[in-house]
Amino acid sequence: MTDTTLTITVLGCGGSSGVPLIGGADGRGAWGECDPNEPRNRRTRASIVVQAPDKRRLLVDTGPDMRNQLIANGIPYADAIFYTHAHADHIAGLDDVRPFNWALERPIEIFGTETTLSEIHGRFDYAFRPWTPKDAFRPGVEPRFIKGGERQEIIGLLLDVFEQDHGKLNSLGFRCGGFAYCTDVVYLTDDVLSLLEGVDTWMVDCLQLKPHSAHAWLDRVLEWRERIQPRRTILTHLGPFMDWSTLEKMLPEGIEAAFDGLTFTAPGLIAS
Picture 1 (cartoon, one colour):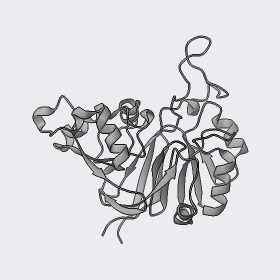
Picture 2: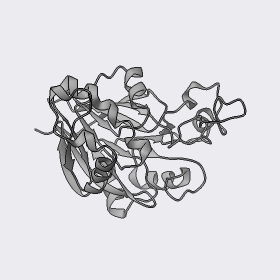
Picture 3: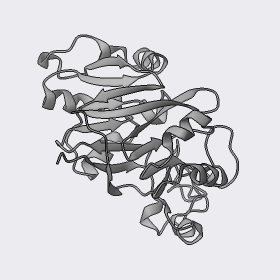
């Protein structure tokens, strides 16, 4: 029987400024309501790696913390990159994909909407130029435009990709068999909720407890969860008012807060 197990590593689960934010009375960080003595409250910007059964890796977003995240989790490179959208906390680490090029000996494929990849092109024009091993001083990428509502094969994984409302722009989420990832989202359509129904493990944006114009909050996530009925729900993109220990005590069974370095498995959908 073909192995379909995905291994997911949470590189980061913080909001756009991470936790703690720059600042604080002593200059060592503004923690909001997060206990600085709880290591799981120290959050870098949101990103994950999805490892396929054949050990190839899909990196989701390249935030400004990417270099340290990959080193901390023992991940030397990725085989492809999926971009959810072009906000800085999800793309600013692109220059650090140079070691990926060295390992692969070619440009790395990056997947995203035409809008997202065009925005990234505007900020990192030099990465989109033709690349050879002689260009090792800079990154090299090969853009691959994708759309919501389509099934995409990326490194042998079959991803059902969908658009999400992120306030002033749309982001992309995806489902791969029994795993789904929905970061940076405030509203999901009925069609997307239907697509997510019955997923085994669902990782979803939950910035804070109170309503927000661009990010899901806890009550909204709980409403979606009632419809989707996942076995396991993991909250990500957590802001400085989402203390890990407090959440552990208040969340219902089957739902938990992520933390940087969390690793778990889920059944995927693999191309034959």
